[in-house]
Structure formats: structure tokens, C-alpha cells
Image 1: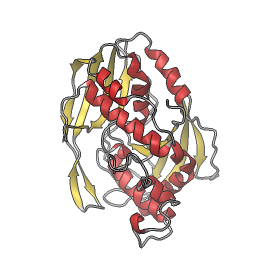
Image 2: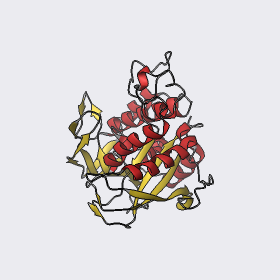
Image 3: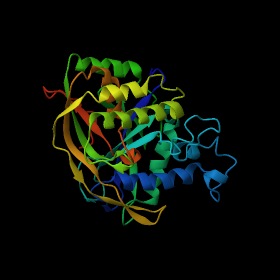
Length: 328
């Protein structure tokens, strides 16, 4: 059912050329600057919007940032906002100030067809370093890019040689199936939300997370990413899966609402983007849901995933969890 679903994880390592001033949550800052840099290096006709452009169906920028639904798409009316095929995972710390020469790392997740465009992403982050980022538009060097290889990250690109090594691991359905074996016979699972979770339920952001609400949002995201970026329609009965999810109950929860704001250059306004952070434990006949929950660790869940929101890690009752971030 996930035969074509592909994911690749990277770490971008940068070194400031000068003083950098960044907010506590850096995902939106990198996402905004990255979008500007990506358009700068890849858009052929910068005077037009993607909607007006004749090249939109063949343009890398249009695909990554303004993915268009085919005219005959079944999902066009139901889901006008197609999820981006990338996620920027900011550092886990809340460090505000970086001196010249100090290392800063953040994660990048590419999904499906976007993996083939990795060189564009690297070039765009390099260009962002020349443009500058943060309040003072501090500039940086893109020093190296690391690719996930099993559970370790190895160098696949550095700014000296400027040669890209494509030996990084691509996570596929076999990887997900193998990881699911870690949860055999488990009837209870915890999700540690590391970045704010924003899920709409009954047309409003929910501050109470039930398992069926979680699964509904997760299945919708998986389905859309699979259809638009992995060229495969998810062939499962989503309604039945959501109905079964109603039987899974909350055992305990320490989730709380975390408020924060970001400034949007595109909309010229400050946006409130609060969400749930903390831990929640579910119990019941949960084995059916593990392929989706494991996949969700990689692709995040909820709104604003492209700049790192909705990131979680699974944790068993014995405290067994993986850590592949290397961003601390």
C-alpha cells in the first residue's frame, strides 16, 4: 500500500560568516528565506506568479512550492492546498545568537519526487547564505550536507569539493515494515511531540487530542503526499481505519498548548502558530496503526509541517525509541 512512498533525511551544516540573530523557533525563519532563495535560483520568469506562468507544470520551483493539482484530480475540490514535499527540521535548542564561525545544524526531509531535486535544495540553501537570514540578514557558509545512512549520518556534500555523493539511504516501505517489528505485541504507545502540533477538528484547532483525530490527520497527509509526490493512490479503506481508531483510548497525557508567532513576508503580517507539545499515551489494539505512526515520525503531522511543526517520536512503555535527529 506504500510501495512507492520514498523519504530521504539530511542535515544541513552551516557556519556564520558574521553574527546571526535568530528566533527561538528557527523553522519558519529558514523556511521563509529558503523559499525566496529557491525562487531566485530556479524561477525562469520572476515577474509572473506561478498561476500565470506557462512553465508551471515543468518548473522545479512551482512543483516544490506551488504544487498544482491536475485538472482531472479527484482531490482538487476537496484538498486545494497540496502539502509540500519537504520539511525543514530546525535545531532543538532555543539558542538566539550565533557568533562568526559557530556551527549551526538543521534537518531536511524530502519526500517522493523531491528527492530527485536534492541539488536544487543544496544550491538554494547555499544561496540563502549569500542573501542572509534572521533580523540582521546575517550571512553564512553552507559547510556540509549529511545524509542518513541506516541510523547514522554521513557526509554526502561539502563546499570545498562541491561534489554530491548519492549514496544516502532512501527510506521506503521495507524500512517502515522493518521498524514496525520493534512494536510487536505492544498495546500501548506514547507520542512525544517535539514541535507544536496543529490539527483542525470540527473546523477549529483542537487542544484535546483523541486517537481518531490524530489518525484522521495522519491518513490525510499520507494520502496526499502519496498521490501528488509519490505517484501512487493510497489503496486502503481510510474510513474503516478511522472508525477502528475510535476504539483506541488516551491512557495519559501531558500535552499543553504552546503559543508562538512568526512574521510572514508574503502576507506582511504576524501569524499566531500555537500548538500542542508534550507527551500523550494511547492504549488498545494498536498494531494496525503502526505503519502509519512510524511513517508519521518522518513526515510530521498537522498544519505547517514544511517548517518543522507536528514532529513527534514514538516511545514504547519500556522507553524504547530511536533518535535520528543529531540536531541538538
